[in-house]
Length: 200
Image (tube, rainbow, N blue to C red; front, side, top):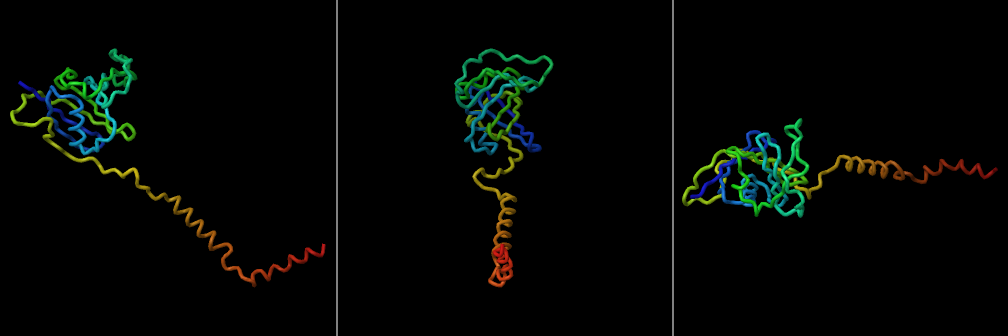
């Protein structure tokens, strides 16, 4: 008998944004990553990580898309007793394709953070709603509810016009038209007085 996890995904920067995702408990985090970026509307071309959290959203384990090559940190993280929300500087690290969901789910309402694109980060908060028996003939993972969309971003390769550029162009025009232009022989004829200096 197979079971599925039903997760709800939130994004604080868009009011009422949510996605409901159903995925097999025996599936891995790489599959979870794929259904998330496709249902949310992300390109899927950027690095990302999952963070398994406690009930206060403190990060306990990191599950990365690719192997970062750091196997030195294998111990459980320690919290500052005076900081309930303190971020951890050293977390046990795992790789998505090697990490099965059910091995990381320890709470009926497990909290997970999904961080996408480290250069232009987007943070999604994921909560386990319930565990259900998988339905025959249904293909998992799947998105069963989609509310609101992400705001459109300006493509990185488009150059936005800088007001300073326009100002500099106007200054160049003033220099071209205010000096040198319009001077003729009559204007230079009034400068004959400089010849008097030759008497000295």
